[in-house]
Image 1: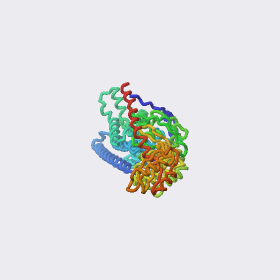
Image 2: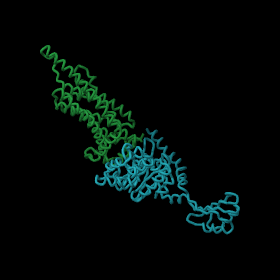
Image 3: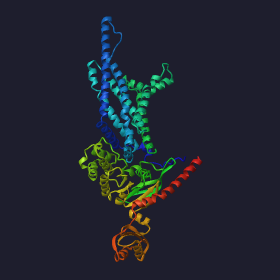
Image 4: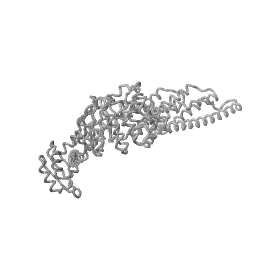
Amino acid sequence: MARERRPETRDQRPALWRAPDVRHVLAIAKRELRSYFVSPIAYAALTTFSLLSGFFFSNMLTSYVRQASLADGQIERLGRSPLQLDVPTIVLAEFFKNEGFILLLVLPLLTMGLLTDERRKGTLELLLTSPIRPIELTLGKFTGAMALVTAMFSLTLPFYYFLAQGGDWEPGIVLAGYVGLLLLAAAEVSIGLFISSLSENMLVSALGTYGVLVAFYFVDTSASVTRSIWVDFIQFLSFYFHNAEFARGVMALRDVTFFAGLIAMGLFLTQRSIEAIRFKRS
Amino acid sequence: MITVQHLTKRFGAHVAVDDLSFEVGAGEVLGFLGPNGAGKTTTMRMVTGYLPPSRGSVSIDGRDLLRHPIEAKRRLGYLPETPPLYPELTIRQFLNFVADIKDVPKSRRRPAVDRAIDRASLREVADKRISTLSKGFKQRVGLAQAIVHEPAVLILDEPTSSLDPKQRVEVRDLIAALKGEHTVVLSTHILPEVSQVTDRVVIINRGRVMAIDSPDNLSQRLRGKEEVIVEVGGATAAEVREALTSVPGVDRVQAEDLAPGVIAARVGSALGTDVRGDVARALSARWQLLALRTESLSLEEIFLKLTGDDGQGAETRDQRPETGAVEGA
């Protein structure tokens, strides 16, 4: 079969080095955020996220406080503690790891519609016949979804008040924890955004995103105990592994680079995919 | 204002649009007429830059759509077949969004949105959610969306096809009102619409242009000759035939009984001659002349003539290269 000749689309090819128009990006982000909030989606996401977060947080807090008080009792009887429990640090580490998992449950449902819905409703035709470039559309969608994620995280801020009641807590760990969570979320959003550009069916987008994200999240569980370069590599791919580093309060360049790389890749693929949609048979 | 040259779109081996060329001048309204599946939507999508053509070029107000898509798209308003709407937004929120992505300057956004709302008669419902609107209103929001940035060129794909007759008239009036301010290309398969609002018609079938001309010229050209229809009371067909044949300039007469005592006749003459006066005098001198009218071919008939036999021919022509390609592979 004769291959279709594609005429050059010169304005759009070198789009990468022309700075995106911030106004376009913000217009698309604002529209996305508004659509989240006028529909029940945003409220369902915010409620579910904060309820699950609160549930795990209070569980962990009470369980470690109980262990700590048991340890205190042993200090009285034995004169020494069998284990040193720094409750706030342990609770924070566990909490941020848990948040990563809850995010895994909620995010694909938030990203599935990003471009899938535009394709389904035909509004992509409006966007692509407007003087905006695919990269602006991509960044706008990404920003809109990240704004909702940030709102979700902000609902967990009151927890530190309760944590402060139980002893000293390290603001540094909290900061690292949130930086990690935001990076994790951004990587997941950019992957979800790309997958949502591939289909006109919401369920397909959601399932595809779950598939990829769950695989990335738990890939290190397949790494065996023996250490080899492959084990290290598989571990390096794991979302859980990198997020756990932040949860411990460590902000390492390696982990930041890992997520930043994924974000850049997801956004780049999305931008290419949007251009490719136009070449498909409609 | 719009120049389309050798526009071609292939989907695999299927040729949806085949070597289409046409021009639209400033302020003109061009109608795109064709049966379903003729390639109208594909053409609209290529002219708006949504679908990249396999071959050919489109330029909008002097800007090549492929080389300078952003510049060209800024001058373009487009209403696809299904209006692109965000049902969860209000009309005003939606139009603000469209104004932003269409590069309407922030300072001019409010008047631009107000103007679009007024043009589309949406004032009373401007703060209603789009999901609560009727189909006719949604179509008007679609139109408001297309004109909010005051584009030089307006592309409307089947703007009235899914509406009821009343809504259809409303939307048609709206389009007629936009005439002059914008260069308009609209596609339709509803024939009366074309003769009502367009200056020129492109008849397209199976991706090929069958004819481009004004609705009047088209009917003129296809008619080939003048024809007068008369109805006469109190005569026989033979008498009428005889009387008409003797009128100078008449070269063909066809007469038959229409009702008891009423004869209907078709009187043919060469193109450009007007025999109505002579015919009337010849008939009313002896009988009662009940009716006399000229007949011009309706668009409907032109359309059938052009898309009928020619269409079949186009199909066999299309299939030949396809078999060739398979053999070659």
